[in-house]
Length: 307
Image (cartoon, rainbow, N blue to C red; front, side, top):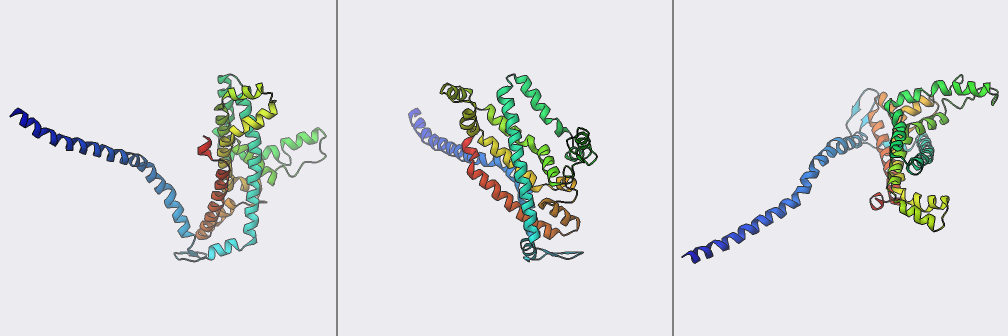
Protein backbone atom coordinates (compact mmCIF):
# COMPACT_ATOMS: atom_id res chain seq x y z
CA UNK A 1 0.00 0.00 0.00
CA UNK A 2 2.87 2.38 0.60
CA UNK A 3 4.13 1.78 -2.91
CA UNK A 4 0.70 2.55 -4.31
CA UNK A 5 0.49 5.82 -2.35
CA UNK A 6 3.86 6.92 -3.54
CA UNK A 7 3.04 6.24 -7.16
CA UNK A 8 -0.15 8.27 -6.91
CA UNK A 9 1.62 11.36 -5.46
CA UNK A 10 4.54 11.71 -7.87
CA UNK A 11 2.56 12.28 -11.09
CA UNK A 12 0.67 15.12 -9.39
CA UNK A 13 3.91 16.78 -8.24
CA UNK A 14 5.38 17.04 -11.73
CA UNK A 15 2.62 19.26 -13.20
CA UNK A 16 2.79 21.51 -10.12
CA UNK A 17 6.56 21.99 -10.57
CA UNK A 18 6.08 22.65 -14.28
CA UNK A 19 3.40 25.23 -13.49
CA UNK A 20 5.68 26.99 -11.03
CA UNK A 21 8.51 27.05 -13.56
CA UNK A 22 6.17 28.47 -16.21
CA UNK A 23 4.93 31.11 -13.74
CA UNK A 24 8.52 32.10 -12.94
CA UNK A 25 9.29 32.43 -16.65
CA UNK A 26 6.20 34.57 -17.21
CA UNK A 27 7.12 36.73 -14.23
CA UNK A 28 10.67 37.09 -15.55
CA UNK A 29 9.29 38.41 -18.83
CA UNK A 30 7.00 40.89 -17.05
CA UNK A 31 9.52 42.23 -14.48
CA UNK A 32 11.52 44.39 -16.97
CA UNK A 33 8.30 46.07 -18.10
CA UNK A 34 7.30 46.71 -14.48
CA UNK A 35 10.72 48.21 -13.78
CA UNK A 36 10.47 50.51 -16.80
CA UNK A 37 6.85 51.49 -16.08
CA UNK A 38 7.56 54.37 -13.61
CA UNK A 39 10.05 56.08 -15.93
CA UNK A 40 7.76 55.49 -18.91
CA UNK A 41 4.89 57.08 -17.03
CA UNK A 42 7.03 60.09 -16.10
CA UNK A 43 8.12 60.54 -19.72
CA UNK A 44 4.54 60.28 -20.94
CA UNK A 45 3.23 62.84 -18.46
CA UNK A 46 6.08 65.35 -18.53
CA UNK A 47 7.45 64.95 -22.08
CA UNK A 48 5.05 63.37 -24.54
CA UNK A 49 1.85 65.04 -23.31
CA UNK A 50 3.32 68.61 -23.36
CA UNK A 51 4.75 68.04 -26.84
CA UNK A 52 1.42 66.74 -28.14
CA UNK A 53 -0.31 69.72 -26.53
CA UNK A 54 2.03 72.14 -28.31
CA UNK A 55 1.41 70.36 -31.62
CA UNK A 56 -2.36 70.56 -31.16
CA UNK A 57 -2.30 74.24 -30.17
CA UNK A 58 -0.13 75.04 -33.20
CA UNK A 59 -3.13 74.33 -35.43
CA UNK A 60 -5.50 76.59 -33.50
CA UNK A 61 -6.60 80.02 -34.64
CA UNK A 62 -6.39 83.27 -32.69
CA UNK A 63 -6.98 86.98 -32.83
CA UNK A 64 -5.88 89.90 -30.67
CA UNK A 65 -7.87 88.79 -27.64
CA UNK A 66 -8.90 85.14 -28.01
CA UNK A 67 -7.71 81.69 -29.03
CA UNK A 68 -10.05 79.50 -31.07
CA UNK A 69 -9.69 75.69 -30.97
CA UNK A 70 -9.64 74.78 -34.65
CA UNK A 71 -7.57 73.04 -37.30
CA UNK A 72 -5.96 75.61 -39.56
CA UNK A 73 -2.60 75.75 -41.32
CA UNK A 74 -2.40 79.53 -41.14
CA UNK A 75 0.26 79.56 -38.43
CA UNK A 76 2.61 77.33 -40.43
CA UNK A 77 1.91 79.15 -43.68
CA UNK A 78 2.72 82.52 -42.15
CA UNK A 79 5.76 81.11 -40.40
CA UNK A 80 7.36 79.24 -43.31
CA UNK A 81 6.28 81.76 -45.93
CA UNK A 82 7.95 84.72 -44.23
CA UNK A 83 11.51 85.68 -45.25
CA UNK A 84 12.02 86.99 -41.72
CA UNK A 85 11.60 83.45 -40.38
CA UNK A 86 14.34 82.07 -42.60
CA UNK A 87 16.64 84.94 -41.68
CA UNK A 88 16.07 84.35 -37.97
CA UNK A 89 16.66 80.61 -38.32
CA UNK A 90 19.90 81.25 -40.22
CA UNK A 91 20.96 83.70 -37.52
CA UNK A 92 20.20 81.09 -34.84
CA UNK A 93 22.15 78.45 -36.75
CA UNK A 94 25.06 80.89 -37.03
CA UNK A 95 25.09 81.41 -33.27
CA UNK A 96 24.87 77.65 -32.75
CA UNK A 97 27.72 76.85 -35.13
CA UNK A 98 30.04 79.48 -33.65
CA UNK A 99 29.21 78.51 -30.06
CA UNK A 100 29.71 74.82 -30.89
CA UNK A 101 33.07 75.47 -32.57
CA UNK A 102 34.53 77.57 -29.75
CA UNK A 103 33.15 75.40 -26.95
CA UNK A 104 34.59 72.33 -28.70
CA UNK A 105 38.04 73.88 -29.07
CA UNK A 106 38.13 75.18 -25.50
CA UNK A 107 36.42 72.13 -24.01
CA UNK A 108 38.74 69.67 -25.75
CA UNK A 109 41.82 71.65 -24.70
CA UNK A 110 40.74 71.87 -21.05
CA UNK A 111 39.74 68.20 -20.93
CA UNK A 112 43.02 67.16 -22.57
CA UNK A 113 45.02 69.17 -20.04
CA UNK A 114 43.13 67.72 -17.10
CA UNK A 115 43.24 64.14 -18.36
CA UNK A 116 46.81 63.87 -19.66
CA UNK A 117 48.90 66.64 -18.11
CA UNK A 118 47.55 66.70 -14.54
CA UNK A 119 48.78 63.47 -13.00
CA UNK A 120 47.44 63.94 -9.48
CA UNK A 121 43.84 62.89 -8.92
CA UNK A 122 43.52 65.53 -6.23
CA UNK A 123 44.58 68.28 -8.61
CA UNK A 124 42.28 66.93 -11.30
CA UNK A 125 39.33 67.15 -8.91
CA UNK A 126 40.37 70.59 -7.69
CA UNK A 127 40.77 72.02 -11.20
CA UNK A 128 37.57 70.38 -12.38
CA UNK A 129 35.75 71.88 -9.42
CA UNK A 130 37.23 75.25 -10.35
CA UNK A 131 35.58 74.93 -13.77
CA UNK A 132 32.21 74.41 -12.11
CA UNK A 133 32.40 77.45 -9.82
CA UNK A 134 30.71 79.82 -12.35
CA UNK A 135 27.70 77.49 -12.35
CA UNK A 136 27.11 78.29 -8.69
CA UNK A 137 25.52 81.56 -9.82
CA UNK A 138 22.66 82.37 -12.17
CA UNK A 139 23.21 82.50 -15.92
CA UNK A 140 21.71 85.99 -16.00
CA UNK A 141 24.16 87.25 -13.37
CA UNK A 142 27.09 85.84 -15.34
CA UNK A 143 25.86 87.53 -18.51
CA UNK A 144 25.25 90.87 -16.82
CA UNK A 145 28.79 90.71 -15.41
CA UNK A 146 30.10 91.12 -18.98
CA UNK A 147 28.38 94.48 -19.45
CA UNK A 148 30.71 96.63 -17.27
CA UNK A 149 33.67 94.75 -18.74
CA UNK A 150 32.79 95.01 -22.45
CA UNK A 151 30.91 98.33 -22.50
CA UNK A 152 32.08 101.43 -24.32
CA UNK A 153 33.44 102.80 -21.06
CA UNK A 154 34.11 99.36 -19.64
CA UNK A 155 37.29 97.93 -18.20
CA UNK A 156 38.49 96.34 -21.44
CA UNK A 157 38.05 99.48 -23.55
CA UNK A 158 39.68 101.64 -20.91
CA UNK A 159 42.65 99.26 -20.78
CA UNK A 160 43.00 99.19 -24.58
CA UNK A 161 42.75 102.96 -24.93
CA UNK A 162 45.09 103.54 -21.99
CA UNK A 163 47.68 101.16 -23.46
CA UNK A 164 47.47 102.87 -26.83
CA UNK A 165 46.27 99.74 -28.63
CA UNK A 166 43.23 101.57 -29.99
CA UNK A 167 42.49 105.27 -30.33
CA UNK A 168 38.84 105.06 -29.37
CA UNK A 169 36.65 102.49 -27.60
CA UNK A 170 35.62 99.43 -29.61
CA UNK A 171 31.89 99.41 -30.29
CA UNK A 172 31.48 95.76 -31.27
CA UNK A 173 32.40 94.33 -27.88
CA UNK A 174 28.95 94.77 -26.37
CA UNK A 175 25.40 94.60 -27.74
CA UNK A 176 26.54 92.71 -30.82
CA UNK A 177 26.80 89.20 -32.23
CA UNK A 178 30.29 89.02 -30.75
CA UNK A 179 28.88 89.54 -27.26
CA UNK A 180 26.18 86.91 -27.84
CA UNK A 181 28.68 84.25 -28.96
CA UNK A 182 31.04 85.16 -26.11
CA UNK A 183 28.22 84.71 -23.59
CA UNK A 184 27.27 81.36 -25.12
CA UNK A 185 30.85 80.12 -24.90
CA UNK A 186 31.08 81.31 -21.31
CA UNK A 187 27.80 79.65 -20.34
CA UNK A 188 28.07 76.31 -22.11
CA UNK A 189 31.73 75.34 -22.37
CA UNK A 190 31.48 73.14 -19.29
CA UNK A 191 28.81 71.07 -21.06
CA UNK A 192 31.53 70.20 -23.57
CA UNK A 193 34.33 69.72 -21.04
CA UNK A 194 32.58 67.12 -18.88
CA UNK A 195 31.73 64.44 -21.49
CA UNK A 196 35.05 64.84 -23.32
CA UNK A 197 36.98 64.60 -20.04
CA UNK A 198 34.99 61.48 -19.15
CA UNK A 199 35.83 59.92 -22.53
CA UNK A 200 39.51 60.76 -22.17
CA UNK A 201 39.72 59.25 -18.71
CA UNK A 202 38.39 55.97 -20.11
CA UNK A 203 41.17 55.72 -22.72
CA UNK A 204 43.60 52.90 -22.02
CA UNK A 205 46.99 54.55 -21.55
CA UNK A 206 48.62 51.43 -22.98
CA UNK A 207 47.28 52.42 -26.41
CA UNK A 208 49.10 55.73 -26.20
CA UNK A 209 52.29 54.02 -25.11
CA UNK A 210 51.97 51.53 -27.97
CA UNK A 211 51.52 54.36 -30.47
CA UNK A 212 54.54 56.16 -29.03
CA UNK A 213 56.62 52.97 -29.22
CA UNK A 214 55.56 52.61 -32.85
CA UNK A 215 57.14 55.97 -33.61
CA UNK A 216 54.08 58.24 -33.58
CA UNK A 217 54.66 61.81 -32.48
CA UNK A 218 52.36 63.82 -30.23
CA UNK A 219 50.26 65.21 -33.07
CA UNK A 220 49.77 61.77 -34.62
CA UNK A 221 48.77 60.29 -31.27
CA UNK A 222 46.28 63.08 -30.73
CA UNK A 223 44.76 62.77 -34.21
CA UNK A 224 44.79 58.99 -34.66
CA UNK A 225 44.34 57.67 -31.13
CA UNK A 226 42.88 60.20 -28.70
CA UNK A 227 40.50 62.05 -31.00
CA UNK A 228 38.76 58.91 -32.41
CA UNK A 229 38.32 57.50 -28.90
CA UNK A 230 36.81 60.81 -27.76
CA UNK A 231 34.07 60.81 -30.39
CA UNK A 232 31.32 59.72 -27.95
CA UNK A 233 32.22 62.54 -25.55
CA UNK A 234 32.37 65.08 -28.36
CA UNK A 235 28.99 63.92 -29.65
CA UNK A 236 27.35 64.14 -26.22
CA UNK A 237 28.82 67.58 -25.56
CA UNK A 238 27.74 68.74 -29.02
CA UNK A 239 24.18 67.61 -28.35
CA UNK A 240 24.15 69.59 -25.10
CA UNK A 241 25.50 72.76 -26.69
CA UNK A 242 23.33 72.58 -29.82
CA UNK A 243 20.08 72.03 -27.94
CA UNK A 244 20.84 74.71 -25.36
CA UNK A 245 21.84 77.38 -27.87
CA UNK A 246 19.02 76.65 -30.32
CA UNK A 247 16.39 77.08 -27.60
CA UNK A 248 17.99 80.00 -25.77
CA UNK A 249 16.43 83.46 -25.84
CA UNK A 250 17.58 85.39 -22.78
CA UNK A 251 21.22 85.53 -23.91
CA UNK A 252 20.34 87.11 -27.25
CA UNK A 253 17.99 89.56 -25.58
CA UNK A 254 20.54 90.77 -23.02
CA UNK A 255 23.82 90.59 -24.94
CA UNK A 256 22.67 91.84 -28.35
CA UNK A 257 20.81 94.85 -27.01
CA UNK A 258 17.89 94.08 -29.31
CA UNK A 259 20.09 94.17 -32.44
CA UNK A 260 19.91 90.40 -33.08
CA UNK A 261 17.18 87.81 -32.91
CA UNK A 262 16.88 84.08 -32.45
CA UNK A 263 14.07 81.57 -32.73
CA UNK A 264 13.76 81.30 -28.96
CA UNK A 265 13.49 85.08 -28.66
CA UNK A 266 10.75 85.18 -31.30
CA UNK A 267 8.80 82.48 -29.43
CA UNK A 268 9.20 84.41 -26.16
CA UNK A 269 7.92 87.60 -27.82
CA UNK A 270 4.93 85.76 -29.30
CA UNK A 271 4.05 84.34 -25.89
CA UNK A 272 4.29 87.81 -24.32
CA UNK A 273 1.80 89.01 -26.97
CA UNK A 274 -0.52 86.04 -26.16
CA UNK A 275 -0.03 84.62 -29.65
CA UNK A 276 0.14 81.07 -28.33
CA UNK A 277 -0.77 79.20 -31.56
CA UNK A 278 1.91 81.06 -33.51
CA UNK A 279 4.44 80.41 -30.74
CA UNK A 280 3.44 76.73 -30.69
CA UNK A 281 3.93 76.44 -34.46
CA UNK A 282 7.35 78.06 -34.15
CA UNK A 283 8.22 75.68 -31.32
CA UNK A 284 7.21 72.65 -33.38
CA UNK A 285 9.40 73.75 -36.29
CA UNK A 286 12.28 74.45 -33.92
CA UNK A 287 11.85 71.01 -32.34
CA UNK A 288 11.97 69.36 -35.77
CA UNK A 289 15.11 71.30 -36.74
CA UNK A 290 16.91 70.40 -33.52
CA UNK A 291 15.80 66.76 -33.83
CA UNK A 292 17.19 66.57 -37.36
CA UNK A 293 20.48 68.09 -36.22
CA UNK A 294 20.81 65.62 -33.34
CA UNK A 295 19.82 62.70 -35.59
CA UNK A 296 22.46 63.70 -38.14
CA UNK A 297 25.04 63.89 -35.37
CA UNK A 298 24.07 60.44 -34.10
CA UNK A 299 24.38 59.04 -37.61
CA UNK A 300 27.96 60.25 -37.69
CA UNK A 301 28.77 58.95 -34.20
CA UNK A 302 26.87 55.95 -32.86
CA UNK A 303 27.14 56.70 -29.15
CA UNK A 304 25.80 53.30 -28.04
CA UNK A 305 28.25 51.43 -30.25
CA UNK A 306 31.21 53.60 -29.26
CA UNK A 307 30.48 53.31 -25.55
